Length: 147
Image 1 (cartoon, rainbow, N blue to C red):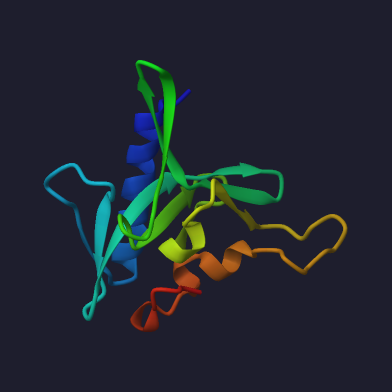
Image 2 (image 1 turned 45 degrees about the vertical axis):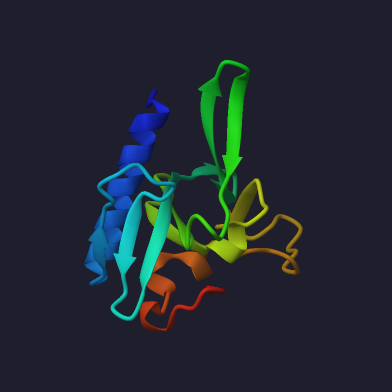
């Protein structure tokens, strides 16, 4: 059983590796911040929060918050567009990295990315995971609204 810290470290290194393979320059802040990595896209820098994403059936679930223990119990902090530019998630079950701009995660508890068709063949309202895979993105034209 992996600890949360270990999962986070694995996700962060997998995301940095995938970005580097695509020619993206990756940097890490020297001080504790709400973001884990910085992607240098040449014309712009992106502050990224890295997450471990679990697969449940045909869906990859990306949690859009951090958790910590406090005197009063478990505290959840959600991410906003003021703190990060995007969230990157690594799913060990699919061995893929996914990229969600802050506008996708702002105000959400989680984002569900579908990796298999729905059993009822529903397509409306389905968020397909392949659209958010690192390899599918046009990194040179990436905007703040994302894919």
